[in-house]
Image (cartoon, rainbow, N blue to C red; front, side, top):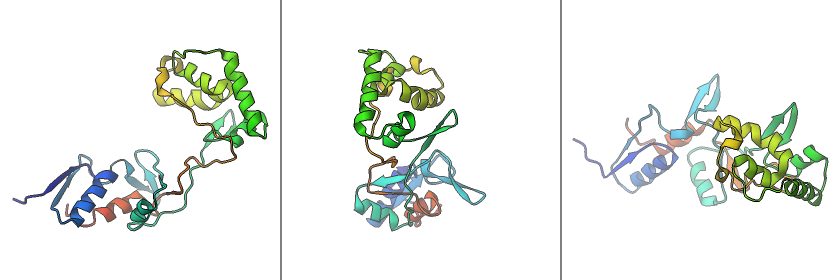
Amino acid sequence: MTEFDVLIVGSGLFGSVFAHECRKAGKKVLVIDRRPHSGGNIYCENVNGINVHKYGAHIFHTNDKPIWDYVNSFVAFNNYVNSPLAVYKDELYNLPFNMNTFHQLWKVKTPQEAKAIIDRQVADLNITEPQNLEEQALSLVGPDIYEKLIKGYTEKQWGRKASELPAFIIKRLPLRFAYNNNYFNDRYQGIPIGGYNKLTKGLLSWLIS
């Protein structure tokens, strides 16, 4: 019977990195996973030549160059920058909320104009103690942003009316008063070329299954 120094439950990104580093340190490692594949939630399925993120989209991002160099030592990353677009009644709006979004909503051009509209809309509601998610969001960004860019997505995500959800779910909503559609602020961002499976397979290349 083979004896191991380390048992790792789960072969997601954390488990795969930990297993790799233990192996480098000379430890005998056993990795087990309840799923029939490695990679955890970053696992990709190849569908007609496209690497589909099976458990939801994952964009790797960090400000730490050693971490960026580490993952790139297993697989090259592209320079993907996440700049989502929201569709509301056939109109497109940039996310996260930034000056491009505010210009699309109100045709304003300066941060001062955008802040004035938001402050006025919030003040008109006079919500002092939000009782649910809807009131919390309205008290942060006003009705225009809430109705067009928050309400529908939130209710679809939770499967309930926003007025039935607790206020603490939304503690803040990031507002960027600059023309910047980049979802993240980190210096290094990207997705592995060929999919995340190449990253986890590189980390676990020593593993005999």
